[in-house]
Length: 422
Image (cartoon, rainbow, N blue to C red):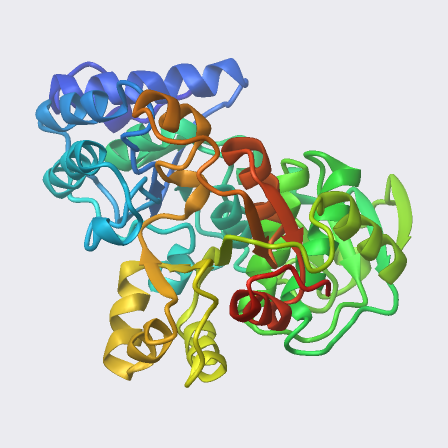
């Protein structure tokens, strides 16, 4: 690998042993994938180490104790608890106390305490072409696709990029690797605003299932708010490992179909209509119509301020069923704005909880964590959501039954305590 003189000096320890060790990891990572040089990155979304993983907090504390500090603006991903209001989620006190140690270490490292899977809703909006390092699959695919930033799935190496400001120039950092590979025509796409989240999530899940880790190009999508694009990408990254997609006429590298494919021919072409979306919903759902439920969740990925405004409008003057726990998950910064706007008061008067920093699949409700803390398994019996990502991971990690439905029917299900089919 070709290194600059500054990078060589850094690797030799002239800027400190801790920095040299971090850069060594980055260089070894790049050489394993034949990267020819390093890239100066401008932003990082950091893996916010969670106490539900053995040794994670201890490793973070050791990393911070080595006098590391971030070299670039760095936001943080989700935790296993709402650290501002841990009692809201019912997390064991010992687990919450252990997780709080991560927050102390993050401050020492200079990391912004965003604790969210949607940092773009908190001002993290890297400009087109900006090299970045990121964790969180739904954030990565948004940065790559909707903003045209340059990012790979950073994983644990992201922490070393945060303190060195470096990442190997490889993968989606390279223009030639960003060309579309598969073409999808969308037919009869539902456009009812209250139904949109479910259908966009279903579309993403179907596309991701077909392409795996390749780059899909989606045609004939309607104009939509930012929340729908976040939902679409999150679902693609859930059923496959998609980190970049193009939507013709919507995303910056796909003004035209030819531009999306960089002049090449697609490897495959497929049409997706409502029939395919309905089939995906039915396959993911294992609840029966009107079956009793005990948990309802929105905010996967984390909700925006506008989504909380709409939730407040829907729940105003209503009460959820006494047998149901209803979480709406968001970031602490968005919750703070919603609090000052009066939305949180309205939502929580219904019996719903607005949860920040975490979500069910990242919480103490995981089967493995329940076993460690001697909690009942599963923590949830039957969940209703509008998110394929939430549905997939709650089934796998919490072990509950799941019902997918439209956003409107999610609210109605919470009020009636039963699964209402879309």
